[in-house]
Amino acid sequence: MTCAQRDPTPMHLAVGFGVDTIASPAHEIFALWRDYLTGRADSVRARTYWSRKEQESGPVFDLLSGYVYQGFSNFTVIHLAPAVGLDSTYLVRTLVTAVDDCTHDVRPLALYRVYVKREGDKWVLANPLPRLTRHWKRNTIGVVTFVYPPTQAFARARAEASAHFVDSLARAFDLPPPSPITYSFTDDLVDMFAALGLDFFPLGADTVGGRSNALNRLVFVGSSTAGEAYRHELAHVILQPLVGRGNTAWLVMEGLMTWTGGSAGLDYNQLLPGLRTYVNAHPDLTIKTILTNPPARVGTLDVAYDTFATLCHMIHEEGGLAALRAWLDAGREPDVVLSVAARLLHVPAEQLDVLWRRRLATLSDRP
Image: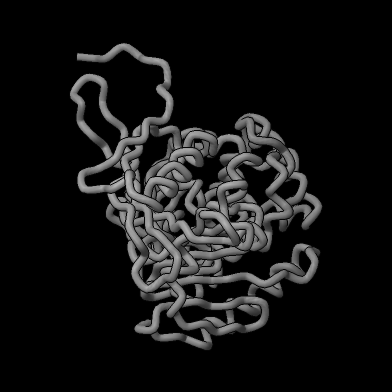
């Protein structure tokens, strides 16, 4: 059976069992949270609800916005109470779900936190990250401050190599000296997301990886083997000026970060043998298919990221930084992305796949 499509419903905010929204200040805090959620799309209005001090840290004042606000309409406050160990601060935990119109099955997207604190004479919203990591250790090397749990070991040599990578990448792309970056890491993404305030967020079976907030110059990594050396996310922060104008296709951007910073904790060159094996086993695979219908990542093999990393490499070898910048500005329409790549590589568009396969064979043989 199928259900008829319905128009999107407005955000519905419910209150869970045992949550008191009557007594003061819980009543005022709940009203503040409700008003923020219903008016969040108006960024100017939304800012009035958020800590002014935290807004000074970067343009993305709600650090969880990209995770929890994805068009889902059912929000339930399941906890509203004073925050343990924090003065004049309350904790609000909210469940975000989708409810199937036919079966009424509930599919959770996220269970997340927000803090509410006194700032001057009013209550304002605040991010979990600085509160949940307030007792973490910090080490600054160059422009990168590494933040990690007290139980975590710190590999200084890896951290120093990552700090050097930040400076060298900026120089290689003729960018200004980097501004400070905060790099938080744990053993896996479950712990890292928990520190961000995501008590639940769907990750699948692979809990190793990284995320970045390039505008706020924040990196979040969960990896027990490459905690200080997950440079893909550092590349996102450093190269944001090249891809932040909206003219870069998603996989071109991720290919750039993979070519410069690696992926899944591996360097670019370490990714190539796995990509070559996959490509050889799929003779009908085309770059356009990868672009429009990317194969699922399996372990450290991400066919889409790695393919577009090789294309970035090839274009840079052929035409230098000017050619690579031209591809980054080519737009997001698949046919245009591929036609510009072919032009920059000086081959007819129908020969791009042939050239790519041939170059992949030689690139993956390099030490």
